[in-house]
Structure formats: C-alpha cells, structure tokens
Image (spheres, rainbow, N blue to C red):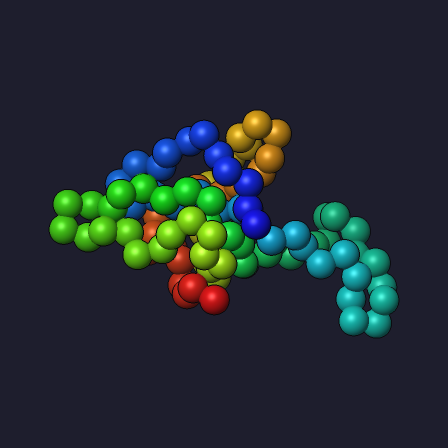
Amino acid sequence: MANKVNVTPLHDRVIVKPAAAEEKTAGGIIIPDTAKEKPQRGVVVAAGPGKKDEPVTVKEGDTVLYGKYAGTEISIEGNDYLIMRESDILAIV
C-alpha cells in the first residue's frame, strides 16, 4: 500500500506514488537508470476535494494509469511523488 502523506492537494489535484521502473528486460538484460522509461502507473496517496460542480472520482489507494508526461515531480519527506490534475489520469486499474 502507498505511503500516507501529510499534504492535502487542492481542488482537482491528486498526488500519485509512481510504480517502480522495471530493472530488467524479459531476457534478463539490466537497464541503466538513464535508459529507464518513466512508469505510467501509480497509486493515489492523496486527492483533493474537487471543483465546485465536479467532485474528484479517484480515491486514496486506487491504482491509476496516467499520461507519459503527466504531472509535476515533487519530493515529500524524501519520497518521490507526482502531483497532477485528475484529468491527467487515464484510467483506474
């Protein structure tokens, strides 16, 4: 399960803990950090209340898929997260 954060996103913003990038290929080749592709899956650790007429539909603990370049990378208490608008989330898995 994802870490609990002491940050509350505003409006339709969501904080996501990205999944770990794959270290090896199916054939067993180790991929260096510089060549790893950013993960496009993560777990919601906090969600804002939504906008006036649009409540946020994702909730804490949901595993989500998001766009390749979605969100802004942030560091909270030494852990890396992404903060993005709910509209950047493509699907709940």
